[in-house]
Length: 156
Image 1 (cartoon, helix red, strand yellow):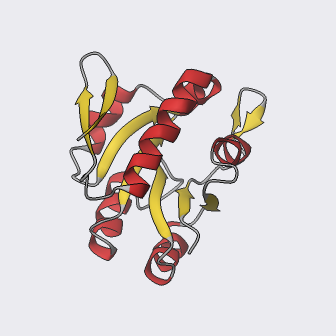
Image 2 (cartoon, rainbow, N blue to C red; image 1 turned 30 degrees about the vertical axis):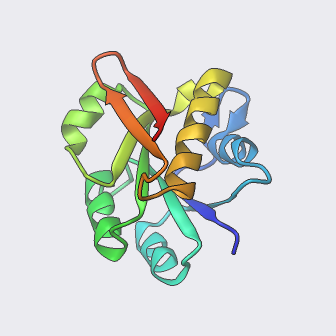
Image 3 (tube, rainbow, N blue to C red; image 1 turned 90 degrees about the vertical axis):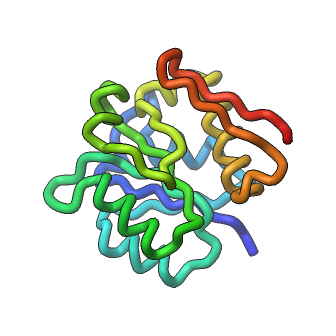
């Protein structure tokens, strides 16, 4: 079964440098994982309920209307407690973390415009691969240093 990533974002055609968010994420995972996009959180819940190949969620925080990212993350966790989430945001991650709150299924916050940087892209791909291929963390450990805004993966 092909493993998939679902991006829940109300503006997948948002520009990130010269590419859209959709094209950026698809190019990052080209050939490794299918990347699906859904603008509507209700439809995304249905996808997660019915598609067992979804292994990781990229989740925008702000949607035009309700629910917002924190509520979406909670609902996703109730549907599939094992599903991991990486939050995508267009604004300062520190303010977003405070507003978003701590969620056990949320593993990283990424500012969308940073995906223009090849080094950041590689880190996001590496983290995503670790979350998808070893969801129980049996072969790696993750260390998040919020103060220095770094994330480290180590083989266990």
